[in-house]
Length: 327
Image (cartoon, rainbow, N blue to C red; front, top):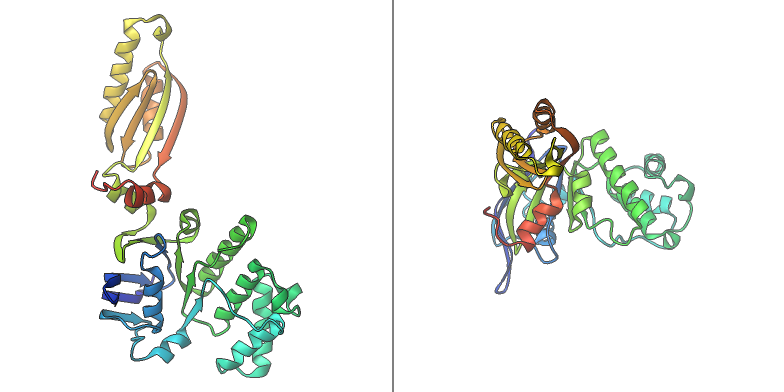
């Protein structure tokens, strides 16, 4: 990353008595794919409108590519591409003609526009449909055309607002992979707004969790898990087979106690619990190797070993459904 390209400081936007965005401060780095995650009405779209200069904040400041969208909206729009939830095209024009038209509106000469549009259509997988009228495009094809449309002016930032709605699962995966590839190839910063957890986790370097107009947490999935689940974002489950355990031998219980005590002394382990011959170890990093070594060296058999790392679904549930985030 090479410094912040989006900087929001104390950003607030009200509509009457309703506060859509409440004292938001956030930075997004150049070349980063940043996810705005939250339920409908969380303030994501209003934040995007202020970044684009399409609505003005009541308080706070916005800087995009070093520019203020409120006072320099045209300059910001030259550098930022925006793909809304519903993309509008001239349905009686071909996909190629729509792109060329957009290119010309952005000051690209006609000859150059045609070649550039063809290259982009090839890149987004629409080369074979470039002469088909946009009105005949499927939802997924329109979104691909929309991505080409925002890229035609070589933006520094692209903003995607719920871009996968209405696309079938296979199309969603292809579209998200395309976003990542294009971002990495062209060093484009991507702001991805969605309420689909798995999609955000698939593509985003960092995530901001929004609810009620406020940014509740920000970071990569691992750091968010650490914030929410204390110093134990990993749980490792080990299934054991101890000599004499099936006959009620007291030596088996002693061996299990010794194993648990040894595991507790491993650096990074915060808690250990047992359920019959299953032990669950809470730790701050992946300690599957160390735990397996303790079990095997004790003379017990390791029947199973599973690692659970908290994901975005766990994080989302804790914030938006589970309530208490201070555990």
